[in-house]
Image (cartoon, rainbow, N blue to C red; front, side):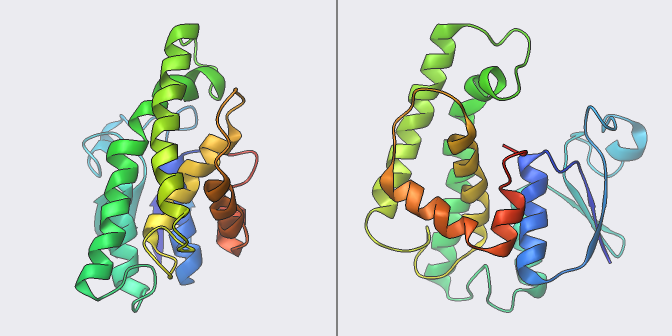
Amino acid sequence: MLKVLGRVTSINVRKVLWAAGELGLPYEREDWGLPLRDPKVPEFLALNPNGQIPVLIDDGFGLWESNAILIYLAEKAGDGRLLPGRLQERARVLQWLGWQASELNPPWGYAVNALIRKTPGYDDPEQIAASLRAWGAKMALLDGHLAKGSPFVAGAEFSIADIALGLSVHRWMSVQADKPVFAAVREYYERLLGREAGARWMGAETP
């Protein structure tokens, strides 16, 4: 059985758990990550030298980086679900998966720490506003793409890119701030919430 190391309040851990749910893969989960369990201890660093969650263990094989784990699970059990076999369709999914990590995630750091996590030291109004503006610009790009009419980000079929982006969109929806309303993103969000695994891992308690 698969083992997932990480706490469920982590957006990256929830990516993995959502994918497992979509694929019907049984797993055991073990709490790691502060404040529950420090991943910087030697036991965990032997599995991921970065000291980051999640880590996937599959019959002695260990893997870290949440997007790599998504690809692995789709390849292992998807049979074309979540990650298509055709080259161009597959490339489109991987394009948006990479965009989520490299373009959409970085701008939200200050705003999320200030407005969701309430992290001490993240209280500069100008930096909060700048983070929200930069984040909103990326969300506007996503909204424009979704407004073209495809139900999912890479086309007609739900994929691992939608898992990553769905959780990112959930975070946008959860932040309490004066922010733009994106109609296509809202429709997309509701579509993902209509999936059993989506509704489970985009809960109100886990922004």
